[in-house]
Image (cartoon, rainbow, N blue to C red; front, side, top):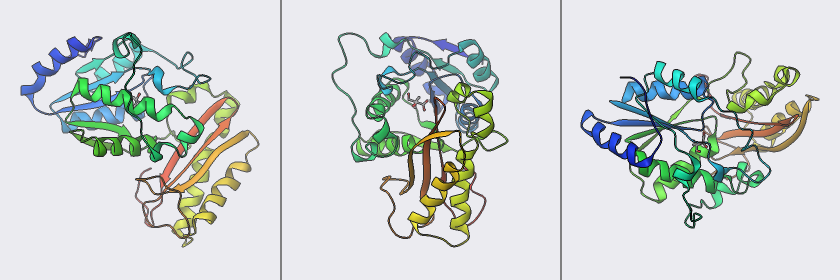
Amino acid sequence: MALALIRTIEEFRRAREAARSAGSLGFVPTMGFLHEGHISLVRMARAENAVVAASIFVNPAQFGPNEDLAAYPRDLDRDMAMLEAAGCDLLFHPSPEEIYPPPEQDVYVVPGEIASRLEGAARPVHFKGVATVVTKLFNIVQPDRSYLGQKDGQQVAVVRRMMRDLNVPGELVVGPTVREPDGLAMSSRNTYLSAEERKVAAVVYRALCAARDLYRSGEARADALRDVIRSTLESEPLVASIDYVSVADPLTLAEAEGDVADGAMASTAIHIGKTRLLDNVILTRSAGSNT
Ligand code: PAF
């Protein structure tokens, strides 16, 4: 089936109803400028569902006033070619007015403590915007399964919690982080890095792997794990600033105190030049977890 480009909610609802008899629908929400990380989710959705839908919507509500909304990279033709090649059936690509029609939106989905930490501390409106638009998209698309990448580990935790607390139907499937050969997590924002910055950007993953290696060598103290992440990042002169270094419970994102157990999420966000990079790994005693 060729990829159908759908720009309005009404048209999407009609396509959704027409597809209902085919079987389950898998949904990959994105902001476009797709890379292998997104496409791996589309492939997972293709393998597990009769119908696959993706969305491309650069959601203004999840950007703060001084963030990169206007500069966010966009390339619809390239994205459509990639989606079609991966077997996506429906692409929902609404305008901002379609999702946020006048008068101004008054009702939002506002996550609590889980969104106040890590990314939420640095980007106060971000998860309110994410939870609101994901709720809208889920209500429009009505997916049986939705696919998000572990790369945005806190987003996964917020959406999982939102689905649980608001009894949102459907399953959330989390795909592993897809990395460049040097370990840099794929992200649409990597395109902002200069050639010189790109050469050193893998320090983020190296720092997280240093914590994972230390954990595997028997060190379980959360402070020691955070210290090795920080010192690895600080050894790279092009790291301009570190927003946070965290070892936290992967469900609540509460910062770990004392010894951590398998499954804790080590994460960080840093600036290299003007580019903000974030990444995480799950701490496990045994190898084999591909994050
Ligand atoms: O991860 C993203 O691309 C966005 O935050 C999402 C989930 C599509 C919501 O706008």
